Image (cartoon, rainbow, N blue to C red; front, top):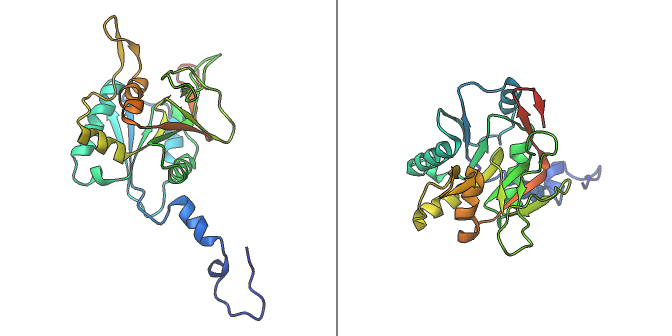
Length: 242
């Protein structure tokens, strides 16, 4: 930072700082960053998780709502809620959808870090925090080697502090661009976009990878995991956060 000479007029240090403008632009705090937080859950949630959601920092002077999706299977919950958002005259114009799941603990500054990454990387429609499957030997939810042109969901190793592109993400702490969902609706991509399956006809799959398999690469949308945003995955029965 350049410091004014003692005999210079007191014009303000930020005014005289040549990188101050770049700092503001980098975080995107000067423009709208409105978000809807979706949280599918049963009626009861682990308190250890809930306390982290309560302390999450949201950008000042920005619209933000928390929406608990109670009573539905998680794929149904996401699909129904997003349909309702897109049908809403106000919410459908917002910038982001943030997904948080009932058994995830999140860092206090995780949301603002994900927004900064979205601002820096417009090529991604979704960036998520890093969390692992529960239990000993769990894998990181960075699904798919993007260097392989054949779509795959092989779990990839995290790179500490860096952004790792992949073919699919978990849903525990994801920031999606609302524009992607508006575009999918406009294109007429049929739903449900999020769907868990377990049958001989459909195979076995989770709602998150169903989403990326159906609307990701087929429609040109990309995703990544920010290994600087560390998210816990709690086992309520044992109290262990993996």
